[in-house]
Image (cartoon, rainbow, N blue to C red; front, side, top):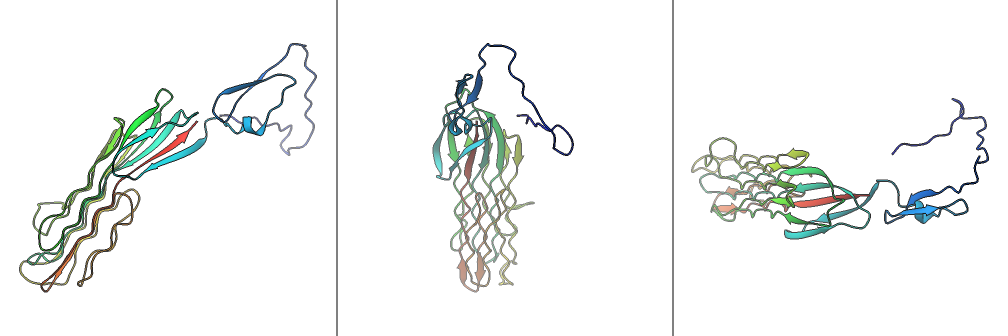
Length: 263
């Protein structure tokens, strides 16, 4: 919306005269109220603060979905445009292994960002991705994170589960991929776990991948358990193996769907 500025000269001083109307015909002033409805005010009417509070297309409210699984976004009155942030769940880290010592971190969930015209929309289905579980003991039982979505508009994939060293060729736990957004941001890859075959070397498990919202907790080391992921969609950090003790990995963080609402 354009601003109207009355400034007679560069210094901002001087006089501005609003002349008497040259017609006796009534005029009207149309102003949106708080619900976005147009209120008509005549020559003798008044403009209240409540009428002005409706604004003209500004930010009004926000809904945040963190409960994993199915949810529903319901449009508030007066909302015509939204901006959504959709982040998938992070993958779980790999636990410590007797032969491969430090496990790798899980990949982070992707994030899709999209502006949507919802003037003709009343509800949208929302799915929030689950964070993958971290590995326990000397077993390969960790899981990947799952996708989040905002209806059919955009989807953000979950991060891949962590691996032990040498278990996968190339990049270890990969971050998720996003589709449908005006901006699609891949999740960060999980950190590589170190250690050699059959020998307890200095512990060096990998940290979880970083999401759009931030990173994971610290990785497991020296018989100390890793710290759980701190940000939406971050990957879980890897566990460790010291002597005969296997240190469990941490879970990946759940996803999130954030909806900013504009009139």
